[in-house]
Image (tube, rainbow, N blue to C red; front, top):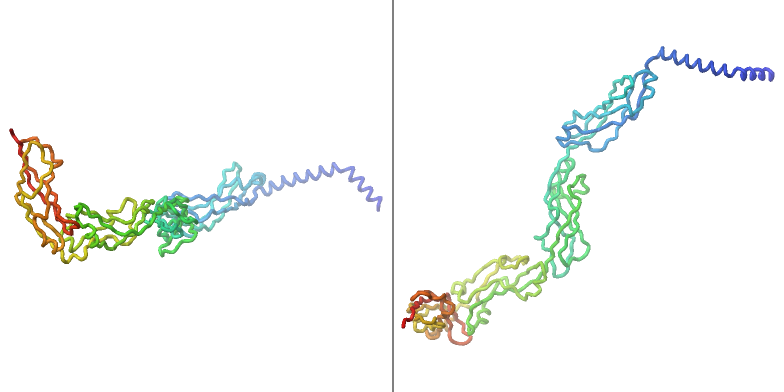
Length: 434
């Protein structure tokens, strides 16, 4: 047996070239025969990337895919074995057909496969499609309301809420229509962990609210701005008593007595100022009036006025009171009386040189207001009337007529009465000729 195997091995070794030649020849013959018997074959090309692009109609109607779909497709091709055997996925183009997409929602779109390869082959028909979801994109511009609920300020300071501002003042949000339709307003919340002593511009956080005034947490929307700031004006606050200035009182008038009868409800006002100037005020003057403007009507019924025009620039009235009243109490016994002053009782001061001065008003009516007991005890001689011609315009003609106010003063000390109105006299100037 060993001898037989040994003889076989020797013969195989000596004929190895003949055997290899026979195998190759057989393979070539088989390949040639198969090409003749089976000239065309069908193969499948896999993992062809699908290109997805919105149509012009979708863009026009703000439609887009809800996510970035990553799709692949397969294709069957028929052709000569020696031709199509070298094909791969890069020889084909797959496109998702979105021409029928006209509104939002779920859609089934077919996949179109083509090839620009120079190889001669046939793409077999297939029914490949993909399920996609389409959303409609909307935009909305909202006015932003600044909020400072979490900000704390130092004692004696307050936030001027009317001066709050946010930058930018609006925000444009974009996203899926159903989400955008729900959002109704926007706020920017100022963020600051420390106590504030002065006005600052702070970083802000954008917060959106739906139509039920509920905060929308992490909305899937885009903003035209990502950075917001809130300007927070800080004011100093003080509550000051009210005062009213009376001017034009003669030096012997009992001004303190009149002021003691004045009431100015609401008596005090709380103000805020954008600087430290308010810290130097001991009271707040709400008005100014000449003594001769206070008549019987005002004494009995008082006056009312608003605070707003009287506030310095930048000051805010945070008291809650918009107006004040000037009233007088304990004036039930006050009366008003007219005195006839003859022209001879009028003293003339600062007569112009080279002119005669004649008072044409032969009797001047002077109205005096005060306690009835004081008024009834007065005489005409108790009223000192002075015509001061200082400061009259230069007289260039031979004669001139003017009307001029006079000053009136009641004799005595700590006089409780005063002259009402602005008494005037007619005066004539005549040049003196030699």
